[in-house]
Length: 471
Image (cartoon, rainbow, N blue to C red; front, side, top):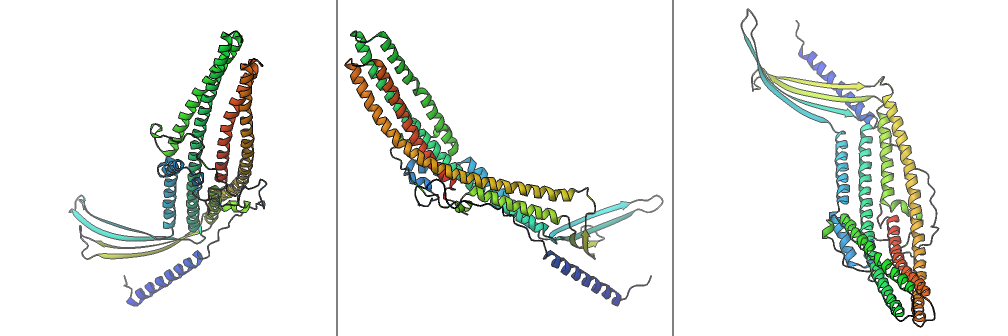
């Protein structure tokens, strides 16, 4: 067999190098022509102003809870933010999304691997002498998929959008946690105030009972009057225990939000007397899109859906892969003495001809998911606008109702004093006293609930406005 000349070997090597360079240049040129990802922008016309009047123009701050001027509330929210399982779970989801971004980014780089082995083999054919063969080899391989149509880049951008959404979800969880802690704290105080009112009402009923009983012993009242007032006393006493149970259960719910056991949480405050009720402005409806983390998360998910559609469309097009390998081998055991070297370069182009419509169905599925997220985003915006309007309206309405209820309470107290006086003097019967008692008891309890409603409406407004967060 004729051996090739050095000139022929040099020619073949030069030709291969030129072909490889041409392949690489072409691949890089094609990878630079990746199809840009279309960004979906749903057309939503936002109102210019709010229907309900904003109480003030003050801007909502991130630490909005400090406006209530309660050191105990500050401590509870700080404790919740540092030890709440809910925030810890949301934080781990962010960590997982960051890992997925790094994993997706790794697909844009070549994959490099090394392998080695050494072994001996003995063969003993019949009628011939035994032979032993030994070998040792080490090889290095490099593979790279050229991102011709932007499929890999779209995967990275989709992972980045998921990461952004998880970060926004963390902020949403933080906002829900802080408003939840404040709401539970206010409910505890409201229940304690209602307990105080219930015990005061019981004391009033017992005082009136003593008057009725004294009149009965003197022959100025009937046994029916005594029985009716005794029922009033028993009814008021029966309202105390359910409120005590609700108070304990609300403290336990607060402990869960704090990430503590119910037995270790104590609330020192007893009423709303030391609380301030801050007022904030709602800004403009157009600013709501960048002030609510849940809306930002919905937009990020929509961007991720755009990237998924782009990746699915790119998967319909041909793929180009480059690979190279180099190795050394020796006919020795655990030794590379007098090795033989090998070098390989490969460029492969692949195109799916038939898959039963699987890839095209993936595109259709991604487009449908994107349309679904568009409508979800639109619905989330409409819901956010409604929540702000409702919170503004509730804040104004509860303020007016509390003022009216204060006047009702004052008049009910005056009415009971007059009814007791007239009954003691014999100018009226017990029915007037019973009616006056029921009116006063109801007005006092309703007043405590309206004060809680005002505080809850403020929390609803802070949450609807995003809690001072912004993109």
